[in-house]
Image (tube, rainbow, N blue to C red; front, side):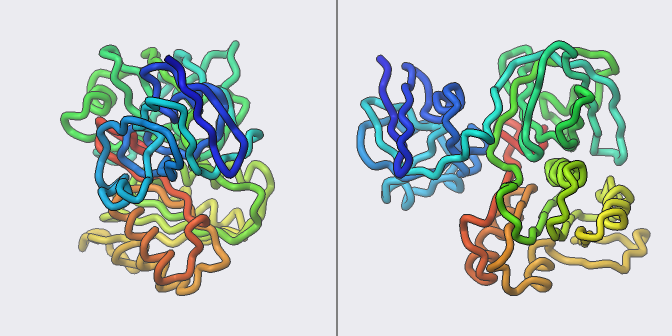
Length: 344
């Protein structure tokens, strides 16, 4: 039996098929609800339940706490309607939505800038169009039907190629293959684009671009997109890593900051080694942002990386640095079984 979901304060209504989640139905029908992992792990799709019956599937407490659930919040990626539903959620502009497609892709190259990071470049079909926003991600469909998700690290372009940054997670079903048996010309199956982590182009507020580790990938795509479109919106890129070697595209970031006067680059190391001979910033990357910007009330923040970094930044920026809650956009990594920005 199908049920209808109504979204307020907007006027969108859409049908949910039996066995389908609210979010899956919204994506299928082009309704722009916010979301990230699709696996009940990140909390990006959290919204307020108004009326109707539903079943809430397994999720992580950091995505939806017991207190939030008791207050009537749900995760659309884990909600199965059992009657018609009314939910309260902000919606993304319809003009910003791209069709989700399944397609094959071919491995062009696998570069390893560090021992545990791979830059994977893929060729898309020449006879099919693939549109996405810088910051979004794709899912790879593995032979057993499981999926792994990674953010594009390059801006949309006409060359029919996408770039991904992957950190090796030993024991990871996909990254073990990438760092082991995968070779040039291999064929992969993918679906996308997904996610509501992308630049809000209608704004002209100065930006803080915050990344940790391979969370740099979608931030790189956003910077390339700004450069390609000739945008000069003021931005500061903070990239936090353990040691200097983990800043695997450090020279690229330096070059962009030199070429684009509106961009400043601040690398931060949390565990610098003696051989790094590091004279730059150290500590937790989000705290370095706070030291530079005690008042973020006029900014937007785009953050991607480890959940502890993203969660700490969201909390501290909004409670201590006056950042409006709706000016913080994030994509937090989760485990290999879940969605990640780049994952395993």
